[in-house]
Length: 191
Ligand SMILES: [Fe+2]
Ligand SMILES: [Fe+2]
Image (cartoon, rainbow, N blue to C red; front, side, top):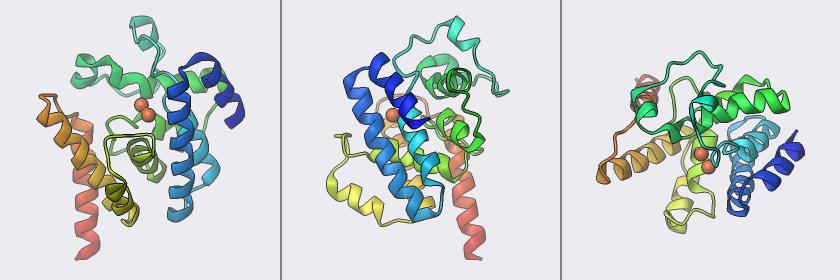
């Protein structure tokens, strides 16, 4: 499955997207091994997550959505946010990918979502910190790598929402719901 998807990305997407996807897959495998998640799933989620990132998301593509979630107001405003959900639909159809952990991780890798599991958190983080990303320093990357999984996710959520707010964009409701869920689970653990 990994090689088939890799081939597809190599043929249909840009060189830089292929490099980003391969690099995300490597970080996913590393995080999966640290946090007890199936590494094979991490590798597939990493290589496949941006499969629809370079596709024009017109109504025809949006009709492919098969995940029973409504389209949020943020997604209506910025259809590019849908590339995870549309990618998951495409992977199901084209590659018969049925693993729900992988599909949920890919669906929500852009905004995060309270329904995504540990693999979803891992992909969300890996997508943001893979070494090809120039927006974070090596020091910050190393700092993040010392954290536990929920701390890492909260850190990336905080950085991403700060960036959005600073640049006048709306923060997706799902991101805030995920943030609340993680913060509350930490509180319960500490009681
Ligand atoms: Fe993406
Ligand atoms: Fe990505």
